[in-house]
Length: 444
Image (cartoon, rainbow, N blue to C red; front, side, top):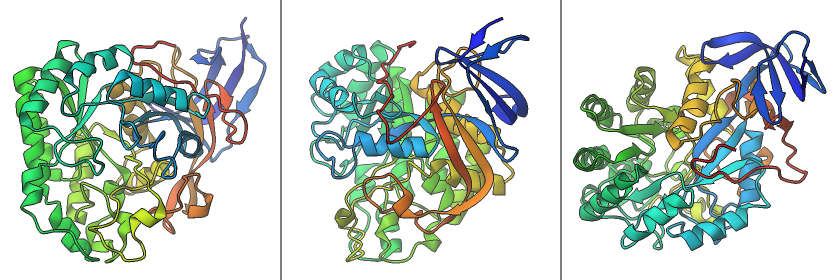
């Protein structure tokens, strides 16, 4: 007989085998099997309308801390994550100052996050011109991979790589079997497109044509074939890249891809002129394209769904003028990603098992987090209690994001996160933070 820390009883447990009744134990912060006669210090019995979900892993979050903490910060971001059922985030190397492009910058970011993290936090490194020699030291220091841009990133301190620099970075990263994650839009196609100035969403959409994404993905595939580097395509918005991704995998290229809740939720035909809260890069495209992205998830060509939470101050969204050319390009959605995706998924016949695969298991596997994303023995006891049938309307004042601007404001969604637990303990977002800083290869 074993004394467990916690026993969870639920009529619906989201497992890899489907949604099934289950009894799960927690011991020393990890899930364990429950044997006859085992006892527990605490029991959690879920209500009939509640489902036990793995804690979400969001591998695409811009925390912007240090340097732009008026945009977001580790306290507000990780509180929002916890409120949304997210138990692990991986922070992007920009828009913090300095960007995470060398070990001292990583050390500073870790020091900044240490006392603020309500959920577990890992870090991506950055690949920019001139820092190829910093990639291996960053890898050895525990970043989960390296992000690069193929065009201006939106901030001057994180410049893009040209084709020769991408190949050099890939060869260096391949030498230690690391991972390159790519913002795949081709600068030349965008330079040749109409300027996005003004309040017209259609004009902004034409300024970031799908051909730019398609050309960039083709370039990444070619270079990955040449170098053998593992690569990942960020925030796929153009469904035209899906056949390329499928063909590349069939040819042995080690490539994965993600999309985001906003590309699965919104459609360009529905976006009013001047509604700059919808601006992101690459942009939200047509409803027919959205349907094809869902098909890509169904076929397994798109592996994961993560937020690309990229907030800014309200003034930078230029809601006063509605000028898409001047507005910051990024969507705040960290807290609402699970209900947003579930709302669209259930309408299309998907299950919570599918959602858990896209938002829990696949991000953990892609980043290399061996103990995250599953309700199975040996995994960290990270989970959320989710009421999938309860509906609500997004109130920006109820979000923990630092700035109350999001295209989800006023939108009706299905699914309410009632509590979120980290290593078998409920997350209290007004108490002392209990999140840990994660390191690639760390088994803790």
